[in-house]
Length: 597
Image 1: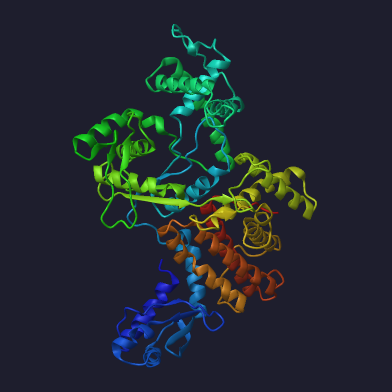
Image 2 (image 1 turned 90 degrees about the horizontal axis):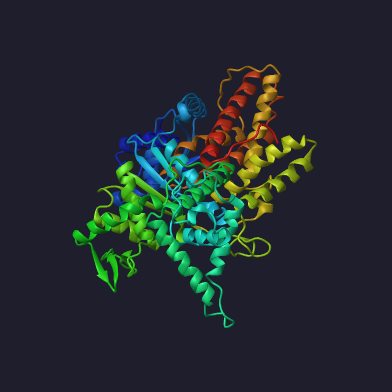
């Protein structure tokens, strides 16, 4: 359905045309002075030069030409503004139509697209830490928004499951358990089905192995002989794994099964899920033929021993270095893997668009990858490649978020801290069953984390403040959920009082009722912007405004004590719409509301 601004703009177009003026600037906008009017049109200002008239004269002529059921309280104000309100009956009709329409009549994508969203990107054999939070939260919301807007969307986790880290794990495991059959070149039987390590042991093995490659002599600069030999052994193990060593591949399969099971558990806690669980390893066999194609076509050439593709453009305002495809020793890089992954996605999904949700510090990397993919034909003509670069999540000191002892905080520990804080607040406010309080604290804690992140524009760094994010006041997730729960409580009480199931909206009678009605009509415009700009923060800003306006309405109107039955039912209908809109929005953000708090 048309959004409210489109409807009002159509009314203005008729008036501009009738008055003999160009209709290009006959557009309604939300008033920047809500104390004076609900909407305004600044078209007369833009037309003054063309028609060589004072803008107030044009505004008055347009005002006299308006005959509309929608526009009322119209005024022409110096130097040339048209200020007006929307007719109360038409506003009520519009809201009723919204409530009756599927998904509130939001206009969705008419040309359905197939979209792959690359987000998550964790390394296997390592625990998820706070550095993985933003990619998961932002990516999940962008996926939900694109899917809601009528696209076919594939969420791809793109695992870091290849390379030296695997060689390090295998080397350390061999040192600890040399008698395992995986290290016996003469073993021909079936390898054990059960992994020779738990997830906890695996997560300890990698940092231990990594640390051994960095041990230095007393000068702090020269690597010890043991470190050099250990790294050489790890590189040899990596080579054997990547060249199909049977035992090492079996260990790799164990690493993958144990790690992926743990990742799925942790992402489930975050209410994040992926459709495609593939990683760097899945495209290794595609790299050599892809590179050969680039060489044959004349795109790739040698530069200082490395193989590169030029991706600079004449329009560049800063240097864009060539995209390196292979290092001088013939090894592939992340650029190579990302290009091969794009090629694989084209083969499997043939997407119209691929969106990457990655740390903004990797922007140059993806500029090179995108340009190289387009230049060499890795992606089809016209396929969109988008990069959503996010900023850093910082502590109160303004530096990247750490544990109290300065380490990188595990994601599950961060979520646990948030849930414990919510549990304290929920149990401190009133008597509640501990099990129920725990369940509610998990729901509200997740909202606190996700809203705290998503309410910031993705590209910006932000301060992760547990005290602020868990507050029930201000621009926070708990405040939004508390508002929804308050509405649920009123609706439940109305039902218990024997209130009617079928309620009808009347034209708004009070200022706060009008304000809430108007705020709800902004849903369509907001969703269009959030989708076009891939910007979950716009949803957060919108629901915060809705929650604020609703709470003003709640405090100024005695909903359940309203004596006029028709007016009370109209209040209830308005609450139903508000609740539905808020619940729709928080689902797109990736969290839900409890029944009570």
